[in-house]
Length: 459
Ligand code: GDP
Ligand code: ZN
Figure 1: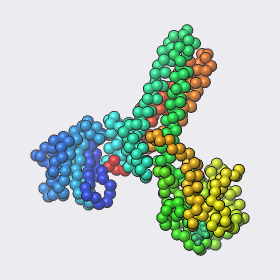
Figure 2: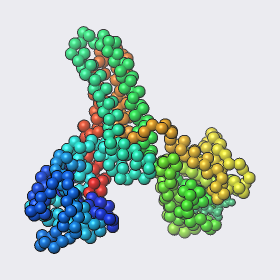
Figure 3: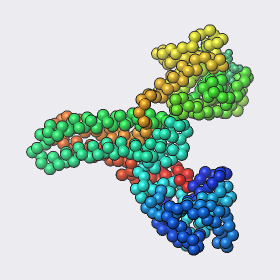
Figure 4: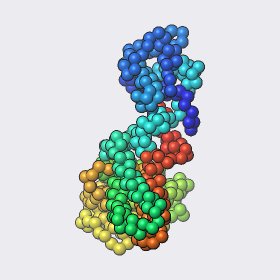
């Protein structure tokens, strides 16, 4: 990604047709562009001007609203020009081409993905966590996720993190001041209650981590894989969980050849449920297509957060089922779902057994489905805290975790009460660096590249 400050432009609205569409430009000084586009008509900052958008030869592309946000009072902190026209793909392409042409002399070029938001970050309009929240709000797949993203965008997460950084910094300053007067070292820990302060920070950090981990769940969801013999009822269970018909349900074994993914919500948490081709040993597969299906299934199983292993409650497990169980990856929770209890006569129930949790239900008759939902929430680690959650990313969770580890080590040095005050100070510094990376105070160019390149163009 370029970090040059040449003016940029892009279509800011989603592709496709819409009532309006917006072409946006940003640059240190857009006066030459505005003059080239609108000739003598001056735009007043932050005023909507109804005006024709014209080609260089004077022919009209569209009529619309032009708004000039004079820097630094804009999204990017630079001059921003928004042209709001009609939202057709061709008319917007023409308008964008015209803007690029009109700005060619001042070096105007097409914006790269996320470049508007990157500039907002570089010009201190947003911190890094807020910039990420812009993308998360746009991508939010549930209402709860959108709500958390919008809170992060408003700075709630950043504020909490900054408070932690501030507390660590205060403690660091105390310690480092003491380091200059070695004869007072021993006294220092007692006098300033450094251990008590540290304890408080660690506790606060744990709370933030919990809220962030729950928020990450809202963002990422849970990958659930359905496996089991052909005809055991996988597609029926997916339908029962999803509440609509997404997979093909037929009485012929081996119908589900391609994987079917359906994202459903349970209490606002997205569950990405993957229905797979029936698992069998490859030598049992009738043809090549089925063999490929089986290979794919094992691929999906490897990526799962939880495996639902469906079994026939009426017929009991088959020899292949025992083979399947042995092949499951270690460490991934497995729920054994005994389906078709309407035929077997079992009661709907959850049974915590030593080997796994067993659930008795009927996909077809919608009996016991709620037990499964609750069990999935439990595995996801979902707690209804009522507190606001931070739609955290993996990056944030790792930084919080690392910061916590440094604070714990700092605590160990403090406990020794010997000459290790400088090590105590160093661990505090490392914790601070980790925390600051969340809002971007110490972020590398590589990290910025990774974050902003995942945006779409125009954002
Ligand atoms: P899959 O091959 O594992 O995806 O199985 P399907 O969902 O396609 O179901 C295979 C057959 O079993 C269909 O005829 C379903 O109607 C039937 N079936 C699924 N679940 C139940 C259930 O709980 N009770 C009964 N009686 N039949 C079911
Ligand atoms: Zn199926």
